Length: 169
Image (spheres, rainbow, N blue to C red):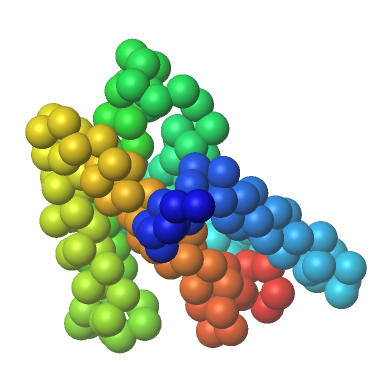
């Protein structure tokens, strides 16, 4: 019997499961809000500035592309094209977040530390794969997908945040 390291327990299947749960949570938010007699208030979202709309569009794109990456075969030309598209989407999410200062009007908040880390970790993940460190590449990109996208996205559904207001407000 061989020992399993904690890092190896985060398999693509588990990350995929988390992505499915995140997507289902979004669908669940719609269903719950309709059950309680409140349809999503898309007008509230549409009244927001273009930076926030770009941020959400890039985040949803990154979520979809990241999910495809977890499911797909690694090392193929398609994986590389989707991967670069995901990197562009994640970079857009991180950079656009610096212009969103609703939580701490006029100033950066703690969530911007995650954006800064994303801008550091993305090139690290690319460097790992170019250096032949495939496992490190997978761990880095998987952590960015899980922490920088799925978990951070889940926090947008907390009371007082925009997505809460859109779906439950």
